[in-house]
Length: 398
Image (cartoon, rainbow, N blue to C red; front, side, top):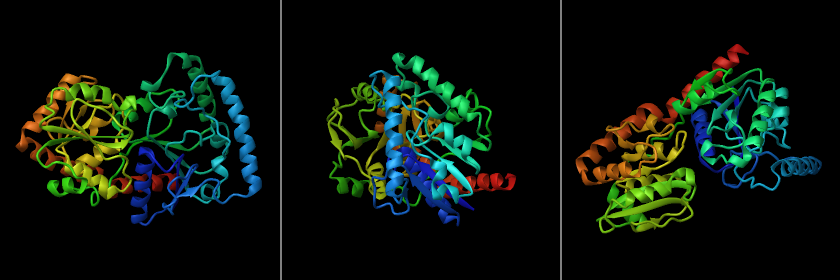
């Protein structure tokens, strides 16, 4: 069995989840390669860049295709900002890459700017598995509805129509929903609803993300021992979807003398509480220490799928406070391993944080339960085996 995992880049939450899956599969004896369009982390030697080994002529061909496509996109958006809007076209032909041609199954992940709908679904021969890391595959141009802008409405409808036309050519496509929320939305969607769906959450290495001595973790990051620490994690701290504006309102219920906000991610935020920024950390063991140093982890997302940060927190035995949105309730069971507030209810979220921080016994019990849930339901071994079972079924059917 030879699998190729395909993702646009080698950073971000989708890549992290897919890269963990690859290692989980390899541990189970499955040959799994990884193909990305853009490679920034050269230290990842088991990841191959799409144009990495291609000839000069091939690079010229892709450059011409790219420029022609960019002109088409620029004409379509009429000067609108395009940073968060995704088109179903790409100058790259994934199906022609040697790793893909030699694979038994092609496993797609986050595919913005990499997947060319008109050619891929018409030409691909192998079974295709597509893990949904956001709602873009079954919607128009935006990754999440919270990013949608009214001025894109007509263009968004056009993108949906293009996707529908070319997805009609898909012959052996299976969809994986990593949360119950996104699984339901995809099953009900016009674009992907007709394809077989499977519920397989992401997995995490519970031997890396595990509880550690809190005092030692705080010494490692030079954090105070005498304050309650709230951890907020986001790849981009100012991403409005991650909800820091609502978190800041919640934090006003807490005392600056007794509590500290610690952030992990790119950018900076200001708060009613003192803030200690850990910056962006890529090393998993150091990330795990950050969770261990915190009393609670908070996730005020307005819309989210199955955030890696929540999975990491519960694996490290850190109770969670957050909004009851998307796939967060899959991992955080209210009253068991954390407390969930109604979406965008900053007051309720603040009261939940206050309750957790003021009750040491509750936090300890919830931390133990969090670790139990992570091991029982989200360990990498379990999820790798579930993927293997799906792959085997597809190959037998083929």
